[in-house]
Length: 449
Image (cartoon, rainbow, N blue to C red; front, side, top):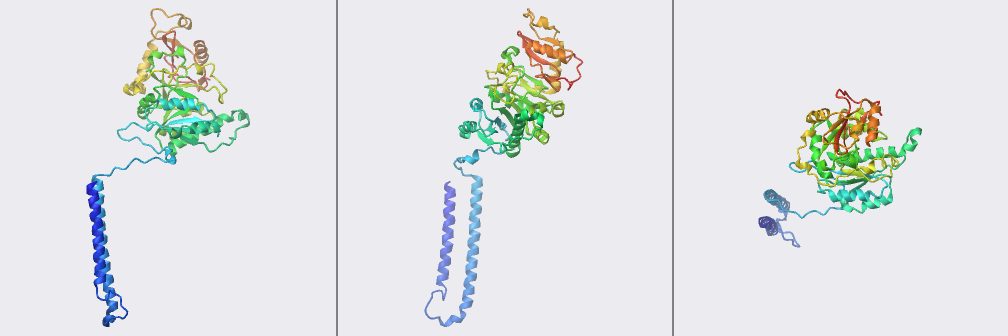
């Protein structure tokens, strides 16, 4: 700092000295002082003025060269020791998410996109997200609001700079076929998803995002889980998403003592899920006008790819109100077990979830387990409480067994919820059970529904 100040003073002194010399030079020249009568040599005045102009131009040229040298020395000094500037206080406009990359040697930035509409209970969702996120820089929260609901907007605004609040601009009704008038809400949801994901990946230019709806509550290790599985999605192209949700994650159907277990599933779970920008590049041009989640489960979109899902859910839904009017909520969703203990996923080796390794281990475990009948399974387990296999042989067989065991029995394009290669894994009376097709299974039948 002292060297920089000395250099600046030297430059200023030189500048003043040159100007002083020039002034003395001009005033000291013959004919420089004005008088009432021109001197006898006045006929030489034009030549003298020309000479003065030339001298002044030369002096100015020297001064410019000197100033350029001073500026160059200043730049060199700043490069060697850059000055420290005080941190800039962000203005309100700067709270909008900025384009993000993955800095070398730093943890990736993964925004959380919260889709909101007219639930003022979004506060419950945001409170838990902000409570459990380990870093505001690495996990910026973007709340995208549809519907224009003033009370919900006020709740979101109450968080100030902790979240970025963006608003879906088109609140008009969507043109729908006459037979779909009662599904207007599903069309608006799909439109909102498309706009919000476009903002995240096109406007803000993030490379990955976690999508959460406003009626979800997250677990303490929600962020730890997604941070750990992100590299899997980047490395294994047979994976296209990771979800915090387990469709069959009811209290009695999971092993809460093994909350670290993760699985591959062919069923797109949603309800708190991670995707990469490359997937949005693929999906955006053909995004559907409605029922986007079931559209994601179609073979044309899934293309044989799987998602990662946990043994114990890292999200739970508290929103019975919605376009589905409580469908599945009272029967299944409100009973989902939310994980309550922190699992350090980022310190674990998750390479077992890569396709080749996973299928080798998983299929061996499934088909080496002894087969059992439903009646035997429903009895209290004896001394042998190891894994067992319950086999189904068709759509009706699967649905009957699933219903009897409290599993979700619906199929989407032939894929059972939480299933992988037709196998649904769950716990019954403390035993690990594989509800599985025959070992010669060749693929899903999209006609099963």
